[in-house]
Length: 446
Ligand SMILES: *[C@@H]1O[C@H](CO)[C@@H](O)[C@H](O)[C@H]1NC(C)=O
Ligand SMILES: *[C@@H]1O[C@H](CO)[C@@H](O)[C@H](O)[C@H]1NC(C)=O
Ligand SMILES: *[C@@H]1O[C@H](CO)[C@@H](O)[C@H](O)[C@H]1NC(C)=O
Image (cartoon, rainbow, N blue to C red):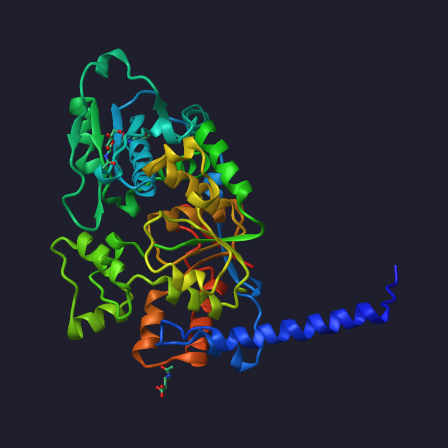
């Protein structure tokens, strides 16, 4: 239908347009000065050139699951078993998963039978969710069939005793599990390990690596209950969306021993409370520490880097994080469409969730989001980027704290800073850097 506007409508539109413009101008003048004087983001658009969003840059490489585990039939399992191994896992959900994956490889290497792992949840999470509360056990058993022997119930010969704990954390570097752990396994028949060390690569047969890869990337899926809750969350997030893993939390900052020049007093208090005996570095040490990329990015710094990547400020962003993020204003003052679990899920069964199960929600959303950006390369980021690569999602990027710190320490700011950040991150993205863990994934030239 063609619209023929009569005079009065046109006049109304004109008045409206003038009014909108006036409001716009007023807003610009009335906006309080940025609380972050170091690098005004208003200089962003002054360079004039319109850059495309980072995700549209052509990549030359991507990581795909290697053929030797995804396509070939696993080598036959040995007839007997050398004994039973339980993997004891500590820390956050993704750290436990990483150790468990390594443990599956070790169990296969030793021709042992795997018992379901023990998830020893960190005390600060105050919960006790077992492996079976997070992952679908039946699915795990099915998917690992032929790769490694797994039992849900211990056989009578060992069922009555606790496993003998074998310490695998003694040495640095690589470790030979056949040399150091097999004798204990043969002697006691039932042992528990936490594989803190990686197996010596030159003595790692393909069948053991294949068991690790299969167990870690093809055999772990969330329980039905958790998956249903995660799906509910996923559906509540406006699409398309970016998941941002931002970890500017008191414990993280205290642990980093970094200092920041413009934090609110409540953040400073929270960091001090989490500090313990780790005092922040000062003077020259602090400067070197920061330029080595040891300092967590603040929400404001993160917003600046996102802008340097030409990620539009109206992007829907899901924050994969707890509610303890400090200085979030630094992000939300620039990116307005930010969502969190607790803003999207308010029902009783969500309120009852904590620790592991909440982390599982973030994990699920992260692997299913259109894009994923982490401000850090932690256990969750490693697991998520690998799973995304496994699913063929490649809009995954890790922000470089080091690049940021280096540019800033040279006094670079404004447009030049954005340009430097763009270059460095674009190069990483083009080369597929950090998009999967190398052990189970192979480089694929595009
Ligand atoms: C495991 O079994 C394979 C044959 O199936 C054998 O070659 C290998 O030496 C065994 N390893 C151990 C540690 O028993
Ligand atoms: C830990 O959990 C117990 C039992 O669920 C509860 O009574 C207690 O208040 C919790 N403590 C903290 C610090 O959350
Ligand atoms: C940016 O850097 C230049 C040169 O180092 C300096 O003169 C200028 O004041 C800086 N601007 C801001 C906003 O920090």
